[in-house]
Length: 198
Image (cartoon, rainbow, N blue to C red; front, side, top):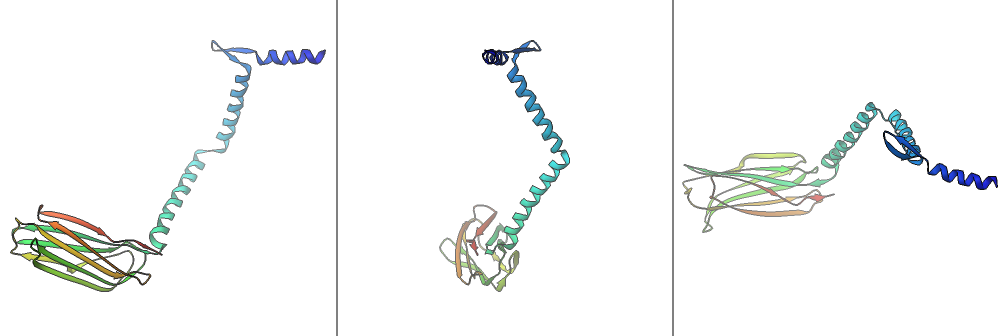
């Protein structure tokens, strides 16, 4: 008999509402809110601004170090040739620069530049050769420059860039790019070879 009354009493407690700020709130919701408040206080006591700053610094350090590992240590070769074409009163100028953005050396590197008119007549050429180009090194110089005097600035021309080298695995790599120039007084090109991993 007593137990039956106790069950009814528990059901009545579940239905109890409390007036908070003019709103009726169930006792169960109030208990949940106090539980959440207690958990929040526990978290605040553990998570301090100093710890947040330290954790952020550690995450940034991990991100930067993972980039460093990728950039400096993972074996790959990645050859890029930047070329600038300019025209003016005396003629045309072609300037090139070779970058090995990879982490491994390439050998037997050769770059051939050719400047031709639209009838395929050769107006100027240059060849750059080196036995090796280490990783993370860029090269520019006289052999990567062309000066073409006397050619009309009112015509279109083609610049052919032929790249050949031996990658860090001993494989021979060749790539050729062709650019039509003359429409603008200054043009820039970035020619990227394939990246060879490991």
